Amino acid sequence: MAYLDNVLVFVRVVELGNLSSAGRALRISPAVASNRVKELEKHLGARLLNRTTRHLTPTEQGRVFYEGAKKILEAVRDAEAAVAAVSGKPRGTIHVTAPLGLGRRIIASGIPEFRERYPEIEVRLRLSDREVDIMREGIDVAFKLGVLEDSSLRLRGIMDCERVLAASPAYLSRRGEPQRPEDLITQGHDCLLLRFPGAREYFWTLQTEEGPRKFEVRGPFDTDDGDVLTGWALAGHGIINKPRFEIEPYLRDGSLKVILPDYPPTPVKLAAVYPHRNLQDPKLKLLVDFMAERCQRMIGDILNTRR
Figure (cartoon, helix red, strand yellow):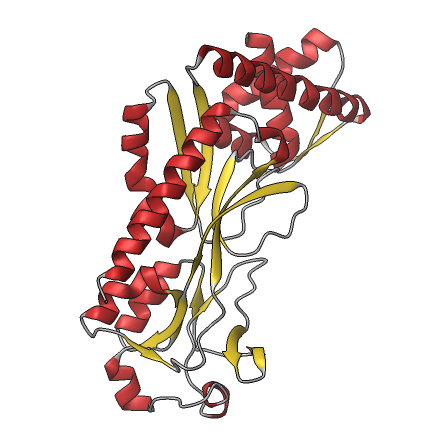
């Protein structure tokens, strides 16, 4: 097993580019990661990595070994999944990611219950509103609010989520309430944007009489944390574009008000996204089934409170 551990570390180093990132992904120290790569190089009698101050890149031998090593690890995962399917006792570790709002409200709170049902399955959860590279970062399943663009991944749709534009009464009293989408731009409204490398929220797509239209809105500040945007909106700093379930309590108590209700943002799809190779993994299917039911039930409960 030690040899496979060394192979796994090497693969993650190549994919993530440095020992620190690989160590964090595997929950080991950079020093341990470095020693395992050195043990592998000693075993193979070849240098696998070119080392610079900040980055590691594979040598020619390293590239050849990396391609073979990926197949070895995939074969091991497939074999483990097959044994679990036959025994009826799924076990192992699942690496999961989700956006902050969905993750904090629904996914994270469900993991202890899932663990109680399946005590031999461990879940490693990472929350981020940035676009996560599932393949590169070793993620087994990502719960996403968005559009699938990578054809090498599989998607299981869970539900469509309504989005709304909202602002606080204080902001609307100070700046006036827009009546048409164009007012967001012509009246210079402060639109609070979710931004990070690769983000697509530089514009908002709203539903109009002519169909969906993109509006290049602007604002005085932005962030890569959707909950920070909500906090700014509550404090009267601008307008947000959010899934309704995330801000429904504030809409219900009047802290926020839906604006442009006749021109809502296009809905966003909630889905589980995972590499094709994980399709038959029993433990992954159990987690996705569990979280899909939980999301449908909890989001439904949140939204039904307004009816």
